[in-house]
Length: 217
Image (cartoon, rainbow, N blue to C red):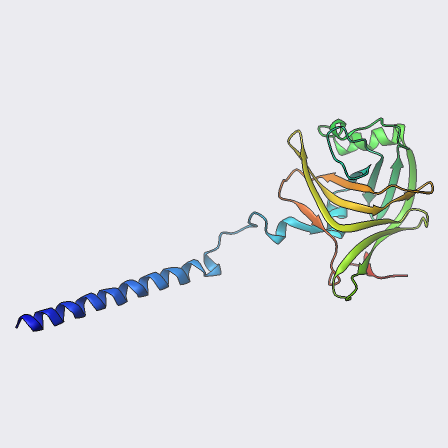
């Protein structure tokens, strides 16, 4: 009789363990179910990374600096605007009139107004973005902003930039080449995003846009 009770007790323990295991596995399955994910983009999700073609449409006013160093005292050498498929370039000719800290709290309109007053305006006309593939032909190595002016074609590297000045968020891309007046003004190409999570990347070969070409001649 004691042996039978002992056997029944062991069966009860094993059954309880099986039920507990099933509950744990069921809970894990529920947590992995996409239907339980919260709506909206998550921190660091691809929804917060815009290809360059979309970025130029969403953010019409950009600033450019020479060199690799960025600080609040970095001089703005260029202001570039993108409106309805047309790009304009304002050249400050390294006069140092405008610094990054000067544009933190003013509107895009005021940035352009300052550029119109103190910089040389050049209408580059319509533009396209041309993808240059890597050595394997699979991915984008570089992207060119081609304009109707043969003298000014900008090349962007596959390196994004995100930085904050006085609590204002800027994002952009590194410029490998920005030829002006016979010199190459490589540096950083930035715009204010208002969101620390927003960053940019080069367009991929799969990008479907009339404004993006692949190794166009």
